[in-house]
Length: 145
Image (cartoon, rainbow, N blue to C red; front, side, top):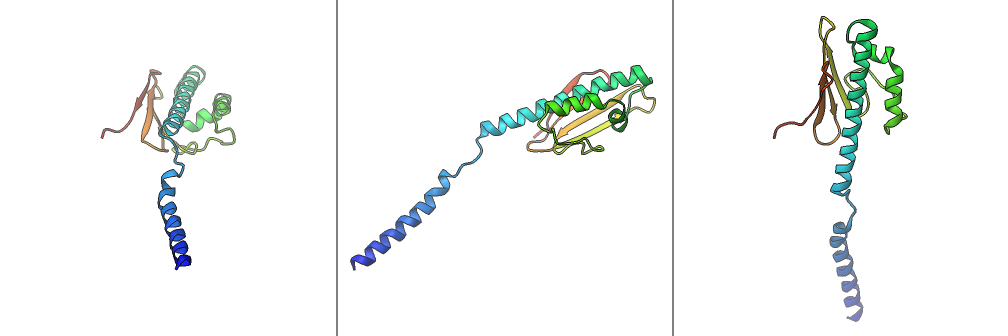
């Protein structure tokens, strides 16, 4: 009888600990997630600034704004510098739209080459994007809810 109580008590304790244990499981803190998101957005804004700078260089050198592919071919040092500052040091830029893991670029050059519109979107986590054009002004945006 005493042996059965000990076994029953042990089983109940194990079950109770199994129910309580998930409460103590580690989950990423909201602050850590927010900090990571802010870091990604800052990198995104930095890349938009780099693209804007490259586009001005293109106008001065070639007389018109350029596509993503031409920017990479004509101005690799600007993009390599951005990669060195980011955590994407092993990454290499790819063709649009998925230029890097977690980033989607839409860069449209006007038919006359005298303007462009760009959107660089963070595809990880909450929807967010940075926008710019030949004015060099950068806007941030997220979807309406």
